[in-house]
Length: 270
Ligand SMILES: [Zn+2]
Image 1: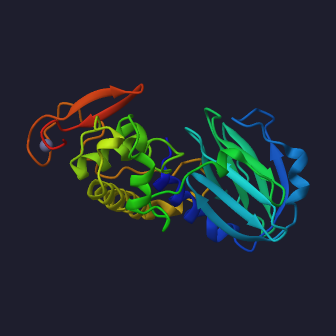
Image 2: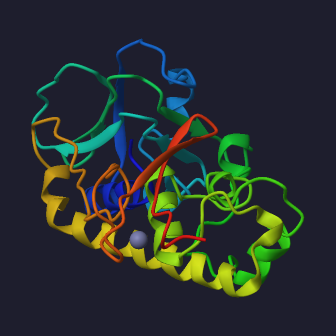
Image 3: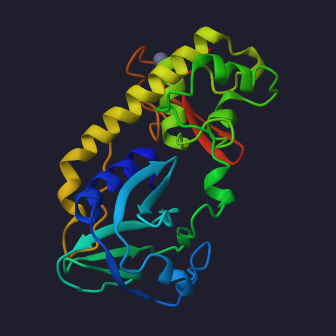
């Protein structure tokens, strides 16, 4: 599943091909995505100048001169590519012709993603309800502490709650807690300011190194093949049940929390 680093890498990968360009035509497979694509709104962005591209949490947002927006979420299996030639492959659901002759293609085998066109100032709860991610200047240790200090839920569940902090998926939540030496079962109310500092520092470090390692695959966003340029960073605990902890040599444990797997070291994380 694409997490924040994959989304950021996708955004950086397609950005140079979209910026200052225009979308002239749009084709839709007709199959429904998580939110059905409303092609009747295509007129809102047709032939309009793309003035900026940003990532908000795990959404990619194209901003147009008219202030209308195109919002993309990759869901579980979505990917975005720019191609010089139109060679449709299985699961291509939306194809947009760019003014300079290239194509922007949204592919999604499981169709949990979304592509939505929004009029100027039109609200979009799924996007607007996201809290800031660890890179936001607003996401300070003090703010995080104030959001979790009364919580009786585990820090693992808190890190996956987009209304508290966005952009940390299951893989990175496990890694962040390992590097911070915090047990995933610690309750929010037992996390102090020092621990909030550790969590945010490590989240930025780990997400940044994943974005950096994705940099080498940026070329994959401009090709005729539907190959997502996703990548794997060296994970210390995730998916390593029974392997030795890199720090203490105890065996990595796997637990189930809120129906998700948590990987952790019983010796290093308290
Ligand atoms: Zn350990």
